[in-house]
Amino acid sequence: MAELAGLEDPRAREVNERHGDDHGVNLGRLRALAKRLKTQQELARRLWETGDTAARLLALLICRPKAFGRDELDAMLREARTPKVHDWLVNYVVKKNPHSEELRLAWSADPDPAVAAAGWALTAERVSRKPEGLDLAGLLDVIETEMKGAPDRLQWAMNTCLAQIGIEHAGHRARAIGIGERLGVLRDYPTSPGCTSPFAPVWITEMVRRQGGEAS
Image (cartoon, rainbow, N blue to C red; front, side, top):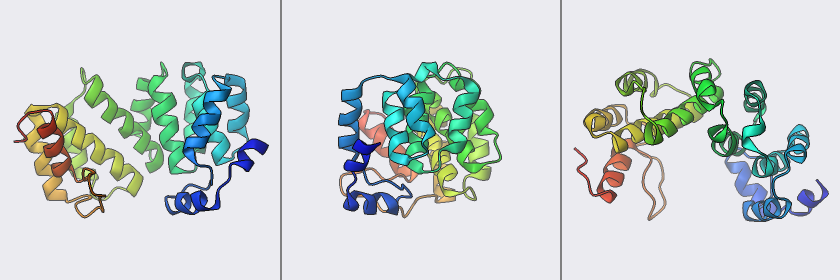
């Protein structure tokens, strides 16, 4: 914890706080520290228990993802107060855990929008990597009905799922683009030069173009 405090950078904190993250550690330096520590599951659990955002991010980098139980991960997600901790927990730990599919189903139906967002993030992962058994048309039905009015984090996760369906599954591509056009979610999202817009029709079209396919 003392070493983490020594990595605190006021400028980094200012940038992070604009995105809802209450820490001031440069993530490159945090990753370097994690690389030095290597995998230490017990230390990871102790760091998580501090409740400190930088400590929790470090914990997620040095933990053993498959060592967590289902209920433990569920509790950790509900404790993850900041967007970066939430994202790293889902992407670096839950996706590699044997309980990920069980949690995906449970979280997707959770009334807490932050928890539901994690479920949708896991669903987007399955859409692109392991779509067998998914009802893609049913997912599009839910997105079409609920995405427009969803809270920001949940809306972003649903939009990612929409884009992945359109990118990876040509048979659903036209409908996915149509839903994106009608809902207009993230149409005006500011995008840096050289980056792809998160607006689903643009995102889908660009990624399909890069893959050498047809967008429509």
